[in-house]
Length: 183
Image (cartoon, rainbow, N blue to C red; front, side, top):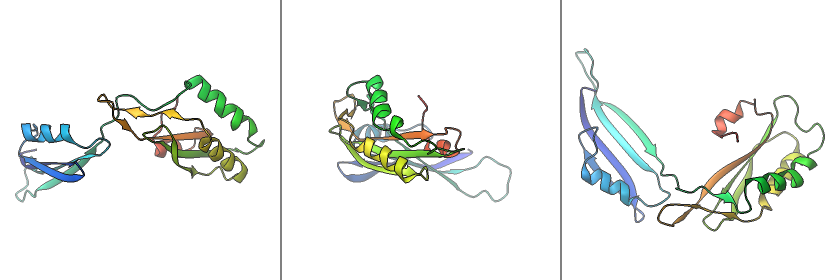
C-alpha cells in the first residue's frame, strides 16, 4: 500500500448502521469506540480504499472489504455435557441408521442454531446422504434434542450460535465447504 485513501468501519448500533472513517491502517479512537458499541451478534464491516505501491504510470484506487464477527466468549453447549451429547446422538440416530445408508463418500449434514434460550431452531438437512430415512432420522434427532446452554458474551448477554451435525464419510469435499471442526 502506497497510501490509504479511506478506511471506513460500519457497525450496527442500536439497530442503525453507523460509519466512522479514517485514513490509516491504524484505527482511530472513534473507529475503535464504535466497534466496541456494535450490537451483539452483528457483523462489523471494514471498507478500505487505497493506492497500491507499484511502478505503474496509471495507479488506480483499489478496494478491499472484509467483515468481522465477534464470537461469544462462551460457546453454546449441550447442557448435560459433551459425553451425554454423544450418547444421545448414538442412541437416537447413529445406531438406528439403516445398514448401507452411507456408501463411498456419502455424507449427511444437518445445520441448526441454538437460540438465546438454548432451544434448537432453524434445523434443516444441509447436505443429503441421498437416503431419505437416514436424513429424516438425523433431522428428527436434532429437533428433539434437550435444551442447550446458550452462547454467552462476557457481559452476560446470550447469543445465537450455529452448529452442523455431520454423519458419514468425513473425506467428502463438503466437509471443507461446511467449515467445520472435527472433534
